Image (cartoon, rainbow, N blue to C red; front, side, top):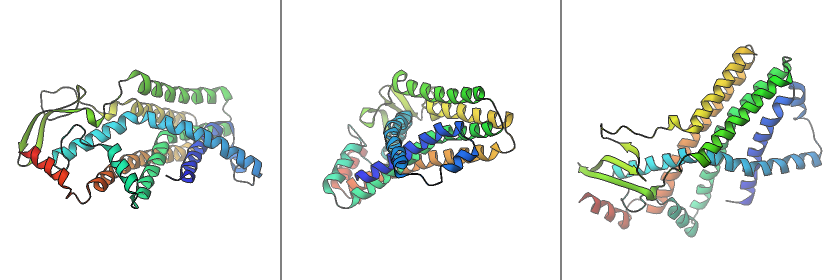
Length: 299
């Protein structure tokens, strides 16, 4: 990816974070001033700060969604194997190998790969930080309505604590979600050319099971990031209903809409990106190496 593209992405993410911290302490008039002309020095300073914040918070967003991202990749990989579209080996979906081949060939697909990665990064940032930005917008309305600073500070600190706790739990408390090379498939049966699984274990953790006796199954509903998002939107609803029901509904619904669309986009673009990498590596799926492995698995 070109340096300019990376710089722009980090600046946009940083500006999103800056806006989140700025909104609770300004009224509508000050927000309007942001769109008026600024000196070159002031503009350069804002961009520089936004860039530095973007580097840090891009990594922050990546950590918060790391378990969900890995779960998504594992489910995608298992679906490939179940449908006979990818061979079973030590790593049924070697993404790093796919990307290295594209970069090595440099046949025009590199730009498209970087385009997908840019979309994933921006949609990921929006899905993570839009809830905080929405709360900041609601707090700005509270300021306009004459609420005291202590009330605003309580909500602002609560938001920061929720994000921080979620980060600590994902990064340091929970076990890291396994990778595709850790897949251990047990009791595989071939039924009408398709692979049927009774148990699929990844590092002794069942991520998918078609056995009615299996009681444990991974669910993204109980991931810390998903729970944190629910708590944040619960806080938004409380602020809207209790403090500012007339005008805050627009802010609340806008935040909900942007967050939902961004999360859905991140999920779908990631899946499209995985398919793109595999297609580039395997060509038109007539690659003898893949077909031979698939055929040998079906015997």
